[in-house]
Length: 141
Image 1 (cartoon, rainbow, N blue to C red):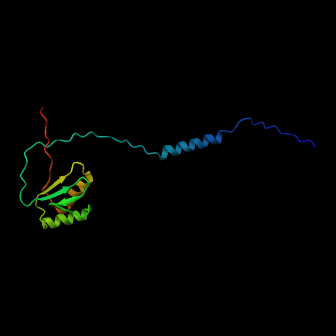
Image 2: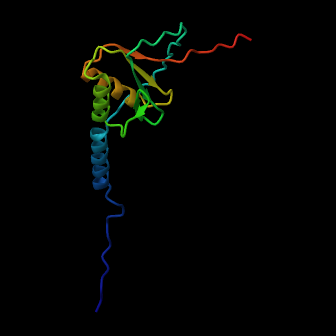
């Protein structure tokens, strides 16, 4: 019995399916990728350089510490929820939204904590808001 070996005339690998798959993957990634342009703003904040104002009687002092915890007139609140903050402001003001509200925030407090404090005051109708700053000491040496 004689077995004949057949010679394969295909001497190369067919690359057509591979190229099709690569193009499909390329199209998929081009369509599904979102391009966002991030901008970094350089903000030069103003410094407070003025006379120290006297605190009028009947003001409400709202303190925001570096951890985002609140205290109203020296009394710490139990949590950071806006509902708790609004309830505390309502109790201290006795419903009088015309009282001046002074917000004092730590320099390292999150922006969200300060905005939450301002939002709570706005929801209760406070219109006389003040934000305290620390006078910058200049070294003229």
